[in-house]
Length: 63
Image 1 (cartoon, rainbow, N blue to C red):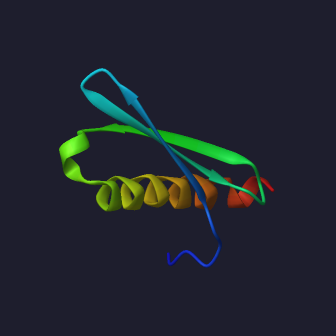
Image 2 (tube, rainbow, N blue to C red):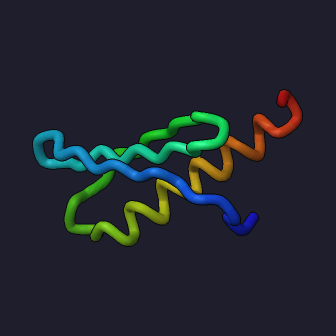
């Protein structure tokens, strides 16, 4: 599913890892992933947004 809305993405360094949170500003749904900082900001952002899309799609029947 292609994303047509914006997402707010936040990075937080936690020891040797990076916690990436993505929030849908419309529904206020938030998801987080933990990744290797060497993976790069673009890849971690893409993964977090993909997870957010997945969660929003699963919630689609409940809203």
